[in-house]
Amino acid sequence: MNLKDKNALITGGNRGIGRAISCALALKGAHVAVHYHKEKKKVDRTLQKIEGRGGKAVKVQANVENYSEVQEMMKEVNKNLGSLDVLVNNAGISGPHNTLEDIGIEEWKEVIGVNLTGVFNCCKAAASDLVKNKGKVINISSIAGKMGGTIGCHYAASKAGVIGFTFALARELAPHITVNAVAPGPVDTELISEERKKILSQKTPFGRIAEPEEIAHTVVYLLENDYVSGEVIDVNAGRYMD
Ligand SMILES: NC(=O)c1ccc[n+]([C@@H]2O[C@H](COP(=O)([O-])OP(=O)(O)OC[C@H]3O[C@@H](n4cnc5c(N)ncnc54)[C@H](OP(=O)(O)O)[C@@H]3O)[C@@H](O)[C@H]2O)c1
Image (cartoon, rainbow, N blue to C red; front, top):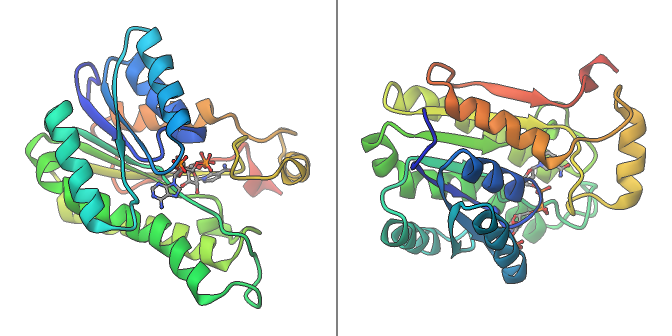
């Protein structure tokens, strides 16, 4: 796909990995709907960055856990940009606890709700446009979805769920659209504490965690390629060699 003048929605596009993806797609000439949940200042900053470089961007808001909010968001995207060609499901949370003993049912439901049900909600609401436009879906999973990790069983389960969902949707919607996932190792964003970043850097063969732009680069690759579907691309600087 040539991204020029394509309409793309990036959930959680206001900051972190999502901001890097929003900026990378805008640089390729896509018209970007930058989604946020609560951090309005950050979405405004991302829009300024894109518009400052001559790109086109609008902001949209929703709690991705809530299907009617997601439907309203899609209507906004349609009104302000037009029919969707690209959906990047990036919004995600970790949760305050990381052991089975400490994770309560409400925390479990919230992490699964945002990270997994949120992906389902956005795909369901966007599917007819994406199919009509021969569009593309990218889901941001995590190394935790393949190896468990240390954030917690709720987070790992949600990210493993995203991988299964990606495989099933890629098959169901072929040959109309491609559906892929990216599974980053640790990335330098607000999701991880500064202390954890230091520990995780030491565990990485490259001696550092990833920059958000390195994940965005992989998303661009998957969007520009028309024959890769049902794939999960690891971006972790060789963590599996440990
Ligand atoms: N950082 C890492 O090390 C790492 C590694 C592997 C995978 N990932 C995955 O990459 C994605 C982006 O992570 P990040 O590190 O960039 O995280 P981040 O900086 O913490 O950003 C999280 C994003 O999710 C949005 N969000 C949170 N709750 C939401 C809700 N209920 N509804 C809609 N949006 C919601 C936030 O919106 P507001 O700003 O408006 O609150 C924000 O845009 C996540 O799916 C994460 O699991 C991250």
